[in-house]
Length: 265
Image 1 (cartoon, rainbow, N blue to C red):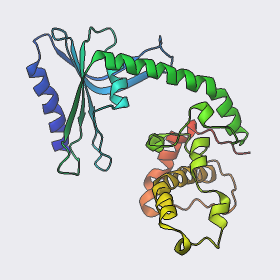
Image 2 (image 1 turned 180 degrees about the vertical axis):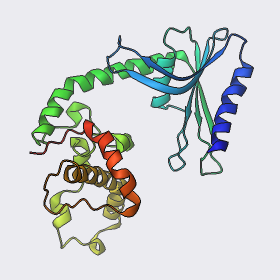
Image 3 (image 1 turned 90 degrees about the vertical axis):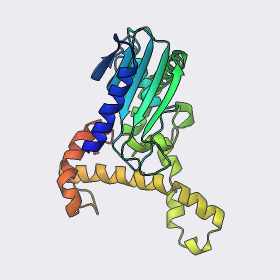
Image 4 (image 1 turned 180 degrees about the horizontal axis):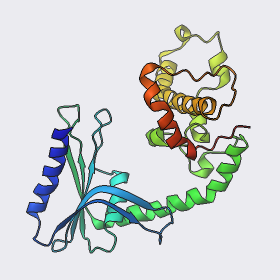
């Protein structure tokens, strides 16, 4: 961890030394943009601005090792760049990912993507469209989820299943996510055993396996919370945690459950 933090600090300081004397580094700055939307706000790890070169660098420190993160076309960093550039005169931007624990030797620990500021402006336009689409569909989605009516068309609402679902708090009930899962009929078809499936069907099921596991994890988290924290009796569900999970389950559930839309009736 110390080596990772050292690489992070040395990378930013080295960039600072190559900038003008008027350049400055900002760390853990929280920026809002209520003029775009009341909920647009974030705290980015660090940024570096050189007013003479009109150049902005935005840094994101990734200590995880299993998910390799690239700087190119990184929406998270583009979002940070949009916030970091507020009230600044910027012509060029460099997005920097620092991932000291990258497990593959051929993947650099520091990844950079240099762009013109117009790319950030284009991202801003797409962000506004996405926000408007979410706001327009939010009432419909919430109404459907609260009443457990999931027969709405995900495509009409702009919902899609993919890797972006990984950290979504609505994953357990998202219509697009549910449509991606096997149906009850598929699961209960005892005649359709694995040994009888063709290679194309096997490959299709295997490709979906990560999504299915992630969905089941989200469902498990919700159920364990209802049983252990709200003391709700749910058939076939008992709040029994494995030793390795016992120390973090309750704390994790308390943090995430406030955003979950499932009801208990």
